[in-house]
Image 1 (cartoon, rainbow, N blue to C red):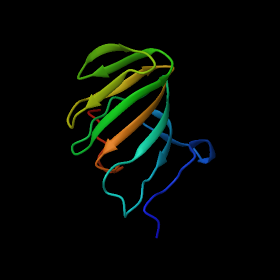
Image 2 (spheres, rainbow, N blue to C red):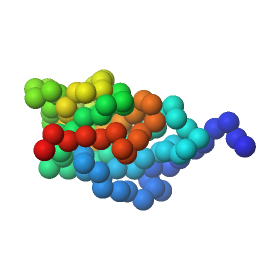
Image 3 (cartoon, one colour):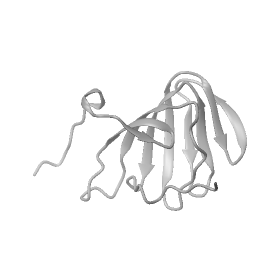
Image 4 (cartoon, helix red, strand yellow):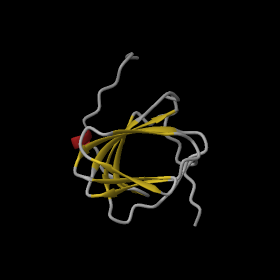
Length: 114
């Protein structure tokens, strides 16, 4: 077994998510540490939060806003955001982001108020 894994996002099949369309790398039972996702943000991304996950967003392309606990902040390429558990959040605008959830992404830890 290798002590590494290489993933090419451009070869992954995208899936829909509350933020738009995502490609998720390193999501597996034997990796509880962290994952990385490339997300194309949809215009109708939903406000959500996590009870366990901390997320790090890196804006790769586009300009828009991050909505964090009801406040909007402008973002552009190379903006990074640390989103702690409990923070209601969503990205707004035509954006492509890299998202690093820590610990590894858990689809059961996505919560909505509505």
